[in-house]
Length: 199
Image (cartoon, rainbow, N blue to C red):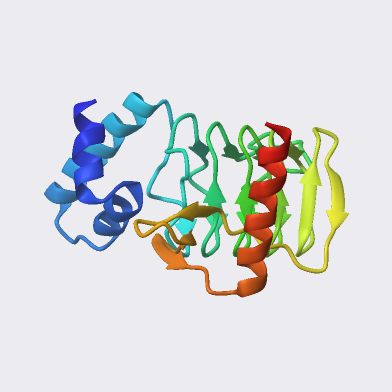
């Protein structure tokens, strides 16, 4: 609990990682590594600093149960939900030997597993509990443990939420962005009305 409070005070895992990577002092790097290790233990996650991340990762539900391999590559503006594994396959006789590469603007649903030397293209959505062991082209949705791929022309992977002034927006690159597209705002209103009719 203490290390989680300290890491949150730093601005969360993304800022802690950025600070670590831009330090030259070995002593400060060691302190931040120990702080991150305590954070991982408290949150039941594995978030090393030796992977390649092009921009801040969005963690809508925190980092609980998230495991990211040290050799993984993650693009800009990716959203990762709880209990996700982005893991390496280090079995030398396996065709999937290696680390995953995730493109830009991807959304990885709760409990999803991306294992081995696979490439998930840009603007993809990996559904909850989906298991990915083969490459996924750009703009695709993956559902089920059998990796059923659905190709889409365009996927909007913004996770919408209400901001401080009751206006709709989404998190991108670690910052809240106000949604200004009238069509999308109408879609959100329609979805909310549909939901209320079923409640």
